Image 1 (cartoon, one colour):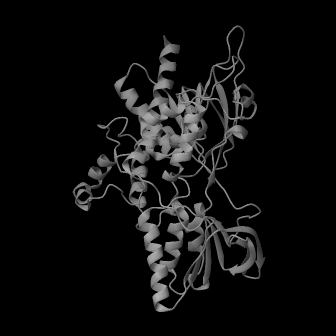
Image 2: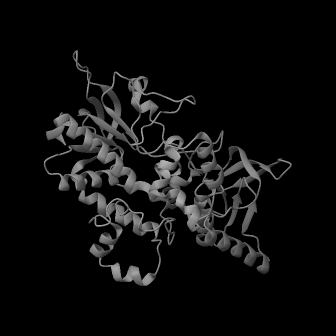
Image 3: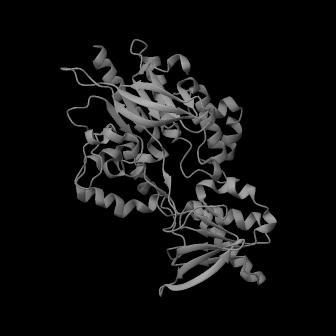
Length: 435
C-alpha cells in the first residue's frame, strides 16, 4: 500500500469481517453501475488474513440462516458475488441442490466468504491496525471534511497515515467471560476454541466443562462428547436447560429488512416489544436438532449405566483458580445457590460477546458524536452517527446499533441490505461534493 499511503479516500473501512466485505462488494457494484462517480475505498484489517469465527468451524456444524442471506442477494439477486455464484464457480451447484438444504455448513460458508474477499482484495490492507482517528484541521470558513487515521503495520514497518472523508467501523464483537474469570491455557473462550483445543493432548482431557446456554455452548458440548469418548463433559447452564431457537416463519420476519424501519421509527413501546417477544430468535437459544441430539446422548448414557454427559442447570460460575494441572471452578448450583467446587482439565466459556463499542477508537472524535439519554450514540437511519455542527465527516457503524436499528444490527441476516444502504449514503455524499 506504499503508493497510496497519503491518498485521500472517500471511505475507509475499519475491520474487514463479513459486514465490511459486503460493503466493499456493494461499493464495487455501485462503481460498475456509475462509472462516472468513483468512490475511492480502502479497508484496514488488523488480522494478517481474512477469517470469520475460524475457531468455531466445527465439523458438520451448519449455518443458522439461509444461504440466500449471503453478502449480496437481498440487495442484488443478480450479483456475481452470491453464494449461488460461489457454488457454480466451485463446481458444486448441482450437488448442493441435490442436498435439499437451505443451511450450508459453517465451513462451506467460510469458503464462500474467502472466495468473495479474494475478488476485492485490492481494496484491503491486512496486518493494519488503526491506532488513532482525528480531524484534519480545517481553515475558516470551511469546516474540516477529512479524518486522519494512523495505521500500525503488523510487519513492523511502522505507522503510516491515511485520510478519509468517511469511516465505517466494523471491528466486531468482544468476547465476554464470566465475572472474575480470566483466559489462560486451561480457561478458554469459545472464540478461541479450536486453536486452544488443537494444542492439547486429547488423552490428557478427561473432565471438561462448558459454560453457557446458547448455540456455541451446545455445539462445543456435543463436539467434546463425540471427540473424547474417554472424557466426562459437564454443561454448566444458567437457565433450566437449553431453550429452543424460534425460527418459525412469522418470528423470522423480525430479521426482514423492513423490520429495521419498524424498529428505527417505532415508539419506545414498540422497541421494547421487539426485544421482549423476539429475543428467543437469536439470544441464548439453541437449534432444536442440537438440543435433541444432546438429550439423546445423555439418555443413551443412562441406558448403558454410564455418566459421561452431565447438565448442571441453574448454575453459574463464581470463581476459577488453578489447582496443579487442574482448573478448580466455584459454582453456585440450583435454586438454593448451593456453592460447589469442581475440578476440570479445561473450562470453556461460551458466554457470548459484548457489543461493538468504538468510543476508545474514536478518541477525541467522540466529543463530536451526539448521544441519547442513555448515553448511546444517536444514529441516523443510514447507520451514520449523528454528529455536532463542527463535523462534516461521516462515521458509520456496522454493529453496536441494536438500540436504534434492532436485532439485525450486527447479524448476517440483514448484511446485504445494511451494507447497500451505507454504500448509497456514502456515494450520495460523494456525488454532492463533486457537484
